[in-house]
Length: 413
Ligand code: AMP
Image (cartoon, rainbow, N blue to C red):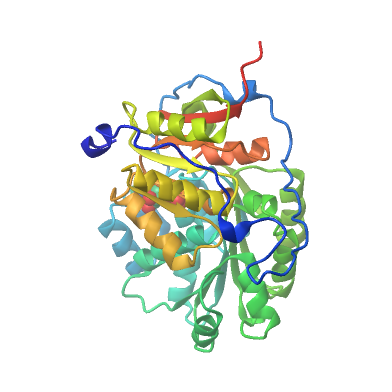
């Protein structure tokens, strides 16, 4: 953490008084409210599962069979790749591009951060540039990932006059409707909003002949299975499908079998991301103590960029405010924030203007941010799979990361 943060002592203790407006039993208008539903607390996870020493994996540079020049790409893509220092394909690109470019259905099994975005975008953009009028749809589990894909697509297609449309929640519907009323070559979106636009008649998927699904396993984990089936059922039957997932579970296999045609399956997974993460727990007695312990951790040596995960949106905002008052440069992302607020916070974090992001699970999946040194689970995740997603934000690109989980009570032997 920067020198400003190093000097921060603990300034005040965290208070948990309920505000006057949230008094149980009466709403803001004074009328009685229905009793609040108790939140489910997910599965019990043995704290021992949150403790594991990092087993740094030696990153050996992948020697690709191909260069981008071997792929006979449209000149615009070839130039943009070179201008952006994409000289050699990564493993998943090396495996998947020959088949994707040949028009075949592809199933790519690859971790996040391995270059899979280019593995599906290059065949899509190549096809659109060579055959104007071709329309493509890319689905991603989160708005942030959809935005990252759009950025990358614009980089590869620069000066190619390809028109894209971002179809994601958290942005005004009327703007999206207006955007969709014009001809677009590539739609990039999240399943919920795409389905909504199709149902309302603003997006005709029958014209789409290329579809890519990124992070299929996460989309399924996040409960999008019905939306995905609906969308895939609307896309033209004669199409090319490019599906990417970090894992091949039975449900992923099921979706792939239903919606692809004799796909080429390519596996390019590297070592488990969590092998590079040093995992430990901190025992705490109550919330006030938790905030003080968090403060101590944040001013510790080697703490650079930190994501703090909380269970609720309300508490995430509150904790972020409290950390700001304590002198930390913090922002918050959760489902109630507008897309532009979420994006602004992420950009500040990426560019180093803030060094702590407080987040709920929904906001933090699939985000690719360089140099996250620590993930702190202020509240325990609901499932072990959520835990794995959270800690996967650190320990990337061959660096060691740290995951610290707060556990209520005292250690048991
Ligand atoms: P992804 O897994 O698609 O999110 O990619 C992870 C990061 O690697 C992104 O910042 C990409 O821009 C970068 N990247 C992907 N492929 C290549 C490549 N062949 N050469 C250089 N950088 C790449």
